Every structure is written in structure tokens, then in C-alpha cells.
Image (cartoon, rainbow, N blue to C red; front, side):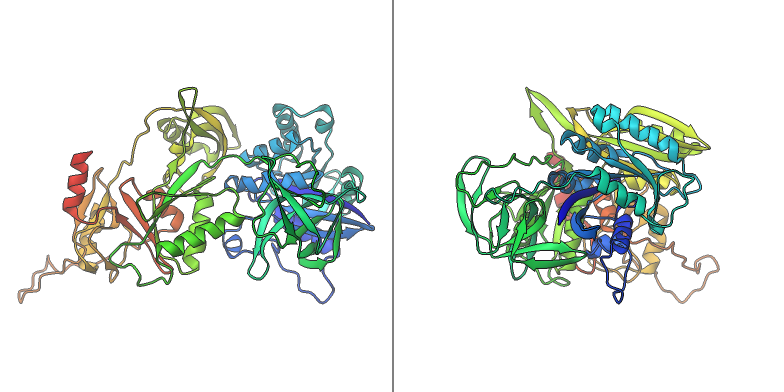
Length: 600
């Protein structure tokens, strides 16, 4: 049986996983009695809740006696390291572009990586049923993007189709009458080259991603480049520095639809999962030949954001979680490193904290949320940008930002980005909507999303993706508002909160347990304010018409983890437990906070 390997790449929410659903359904991956759901490749809990793909996953279908391995990749920039590695295992990519939005920041990022590897993409203009779809113009924009990224003449001659993934339809032209994905299947068969099947050579494979099984341990996932992978074979694992070690393959798995099926052997060209090598890592070469040359190293872009993970030492420590010690946190972070290749963990000497670096706020918040659901209690610091120095020049990460807003908010957004050292690249207005393209330091985007949503009244769309490191842009303005800090331990009272809500935005409701040093709200002023949320109304025997006003509290919107990470300042922490997300000052005591400010 012939094998063809293809990855589906796109910007977030352009319809990759929906398309994979349709390919699986029409490709015969399900028996007649099986129930077919939606977004089946998004199997992780957080993927289902957030509506995004976080982990790259592969599946397969059989079409006309050809096995087609399909890899569904994340669309969010923070998980770009997954895409970079997966592209090494395929022979073609299917670039999905929204017929209304056109090429977006992550489209540019994943396409650039594909073109650098010499892949010749197929372009699919999706969601052509949108009222504001501009399908033909988007094809031209994709061509311009190919030219900008330095595509070769062969790559510029890309085939393209139009589709509605949700309905499982693909068309060669907009006027075609089509009721299935047959045009896409035919194009894959015609355009995607067959995988090379050099089965006579010794087995050689390079893991592009890692998995973990509670019974089998670490799993290596990748493409067999040469030979045959057999369970029971002894292999030599080679690092890029030339050193090698021996190991034994215990099990070999391949994808069949959504199932992982154990096989005795897998041939060159197939994408497989191998168990039995507990210390295998991405980019290492496995071979049955001790003299085999290592495959080219897989390079991954470095992390751009770092946070400190600390043991929870608040007055409420240990009340809500089961895993609370340094040992627990260290073991969990080490386990995460085994499969999350874009993550970097460093122990901070002399403290109970770990510096965890990743590709963005979302990358790290997904990890924190996963730990919270597993029963961990911990504290995390404000995200900080990782700068580096080259030839004596300080460099910082710069991101491409695309903003879509109604024309009335254009001036506000331009002013906001200018204050954050943003540099305008392009500006287009079409039918009352404006698209702004900027280059902005990553520092300037920390905490920006919440302010952006408020200023555009929820009508703006913000997307951004890392571009490169550039010289440091100078000092940015800090937080313009301070925090309301509790001065007492106890339980909040409605009467006290009624008086405080006029002085800022509250984060807590009545009858919330609080402690001294906990942040209970945002002050309207530019400085911190210590308040008493437990102050009760003085009761007397005298009634007065002016003092018995009804207590009406403004409803409180509970902070999500991402909002909490965006909000906190340098001297604050987010306390994360299985049931609560609280904000607090690093120094809980008011006198300690004053002393530390004087030292600064």
C-alpha cells in the first residue's frame, strides 16, 4: 500500500480540525455503528473548552488503496514549536485560509517554515459561505504572501480549492456544484508525492514529538525515514553531538482513524509511535545500524516569556489542594518537560521557586490550568520577557500584530499601540472595518488584551505572532492603576464592598474569605490603596431617612487565569488552587511593603 503524508496548517480558528473531521468521515474512518462527533481530534479537556488545538496529532485514512497520514497542527502562535517539528515528517502541507480574514500572523509563520523545508503547499480557501467572504481576493493575498516569503517558482505555482469544511464540501471553482470532498482527495492524490519506501536500508527514524503513557512510559512519535521498525529490535540512539547509546523497541503503533493500533512492524514512509526508550528526545536519531549518520537536527525557536512558579505560602495554603510541596511541583514540571518540547524549566538557587519559560502567556497558562485541575496549589509571578544580548546590543522579542476593529475605534487603538512602542506596518479600511498591522515588542502586549477589549467594547479582534529579536525599544509605561489590598483577615461584608465599589473595580463578592495582603480589586487611582472589606455598619436605636440606603452591589466578573496573569504587577502574585484564583502582594504585611518600596 502506498503512503502519503500531509499536515494541515493554518491560523487559529480557520477550520483545520473541522476539516479533519470531514476527511475522516468521508474517508471511511468510522464504521456504520460508530457515533461521529465534532472536533474529534481535539481530545484534550482544555482543547474542547477553549476551542483551539494545543497538541499536534496524527490520524490516517485509506483512499483508493493509499494510506493518507494526516497531521492536525495547532493554529495558535504559542504552540508554534509543535508545527515546526511536525513539518519534518510530511511531504506536503495543506494551507487553510479563511475566505474573509485572509492570511493572518500564524499563517505567515507556519507557511514560512514550510517553504524553508522545500514543501510545495496546497491552498484551501475555507468558509466561502461567510456573508463577507472575499475568496478570489484572498487567493491573491496568499500569492503575495508566498512572494514575500521568498517562495520558489515551483512553490508559487500552488494548486488551490475552495471549501466549506463544516459541510464537508470542496470545489475547484466557486461556481462548481459539489457535495463532498472528492476534489480535495483527488488533488491530494495528484499533488502529494508518495513517501519514499526504502525498506532495504537499516531502520532510521527521528522523533518529531513525544507522548506519554502511564503503562508504556515515554513514547517517540515520528516518521520512519528508512528501513522497517520492528518490536524487539535493538537500536542505537544518536545525539547531534555524535554520542550514542543503545535501547530496545518494545512496541510499535500506527494510526488507524482515531485509534492507535499495535503492529509488529512499520515500513519506511509511515508515521509511527514507538515505546521502550525512556530517555528518547526530539531530534535524536534511532537506527539499527551503529554507523548510521544522524538525521539533520530539529531546531526549535527559543522561549520568549518566563514566569516563576512558587510554593503557595499564603495564609490559605493547603486548604484546597492536595499537591502543595516543592517536590510535587518539581516532579510535575519535569514530567511536562518530557513531552512539551517548547518548555524550559530552571531551578532558582536558594528559593522554593522554578523559572518556567515558554513561547507565550497562553503556552504557560495552559500548563498552570492543567496543574490546577490535577490538584496542585502554587503561586506564579508576573510574566516577563526574555531578552538576549548579541555583540553588546540588548535584543527583545518583537511580534507581528493584526487588529480588526470598527472604523470608529481606529484612533483609540493606534494611540494605545503607539504608547506601547508599536510601529505601524499597514492600514486598510473596508466597509466600515479597519485592519491595522503593527510590529510591537512582546513587553508591550503583556496585559494589553484586557484593555483592548474594554476600549473596543468587545468588537475588536487581536492576533499576534512572534517575528524576531530586534534592538530594545526603551522604557514602556507601567500600570496606570493601582490595587485595592485587604488590611484584615476574615470574611468580606456587603456593606464594606458597597462603599469600596465607588473607588474602583472589585474582584470579590460578599462572604468571600480574605487575608491581609490579598488584592480584592483595582483602584481607580494610580497607586495602591489598603482597605477594610470587613467593615460593618454601625447599628444604633435611632433611625434616619438618609442613612438606611439599600445596598446595591455591581455584579463581579470572576477573573480567569489569563486575566489574572495580565493584571498583576511586578510586586504581585497569582495564587492558583483547584477551586480558586486569588491575587496577592508578594509582601503581605503593609510595613514590609513600605520598607521594600523605600529600598527601591
